[in-house]
Image (cartoon, rainbow, N blue to C red; front, top):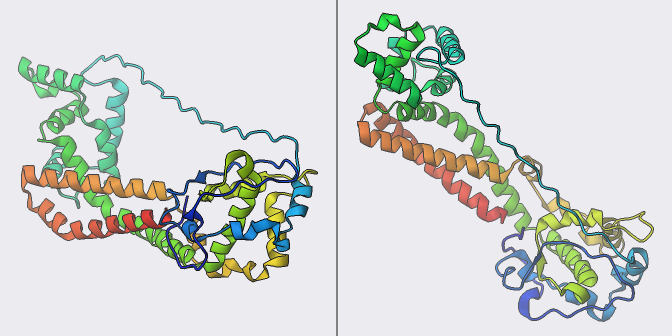
Length: 357
């Protein structure tokens, strides 16, 4: 993906139409994700000029003749992208012999026994948003036992029949009381969200900080810009006569430097580029010294982090809706104390996303 704007002094590459380069030999294609002149506007590539490197093939420091000799080829197989198949396993309908399916009743009994609280106390704690009374693990497990439509129908039918509650099992009596809590699902979700928010913010904030710091480091590196300029020059040297010249490329395309092999298959395009830079552009060899925080940022999936931030935003909005419905002081205190914290995290998420692009 293209980098954002940074300092540079080279002539912008998007200023005019790129010329086609006729090579002596047929070269393998570099299957990068090319960017058009419009797409590079405002990115690091708008400041690069790869054509001056190849102008009249007058730059022996890049060894283009040697490059052609080493990488000439008759044909190159196109890469094949393999997709991952995902199968959804449908749950089999369960047969009911009592008000609850036996395995579900058994699992509920185990869950309640582990918590060690009376069923009525559990329900009162949920109704009062008492975070101290109920553990997060228990709340998350309890969400699985919110009554289904079928269970509600059977429970209401039992109530309407006038039969005593003692005819029900202990788990079914709990489920009956549980089902009578107003906005049950929303309350449990609010309690779970409030309990998880501090840890979630504490986990996501350092990841966003790493992405932001690494992006700033990359954008400010003049040597990295020159390295990318050399890569762009080689790619256009290989591709322009058949695919047209590119004005930039997505950074994922750098992986292809390892896939492009020399004629004898002994070296890759990356090897040739490294040799060229070390021999003729040695001042660029230590470009990595200008880059910081990349090790930490490399461990972060920005898509995953941003997805988690959006989930927190949805959770906060749902908690606001619950407060509007209930106007409970516990919810009011939580919103007052944490709304600003999440707003700051969301702002950092936007900054990280812009910097990453």
